[in-house]
Image 1 (tube, rainbow, N blue to C red):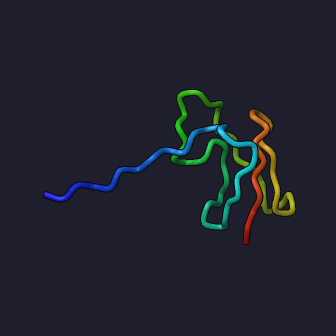
Image 2: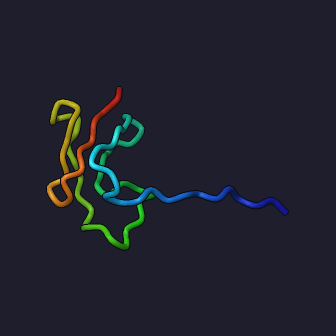
Length: 67
C-alpha cells in the first residue's frame, strides 16, 4: 500500500509578499493550498493587467509575477 505524500499547507496571509508564476493564474487571494480558516473571502487579482504586481484589497498581501 502506497502512501500519498504529506502536503504542508501554505499559511494564508503569513507573508506580505508572494512570488507567483503564470502557472498560478488566474491568481486569487487566498491562493489554493493556503489554510483558509483564518483568511478572508476569495478575491481574484488581475496581476497581468496590473503590470506584474497586484495587492490584495483585503489583507494587503503583495503578489509579484516572476515570469
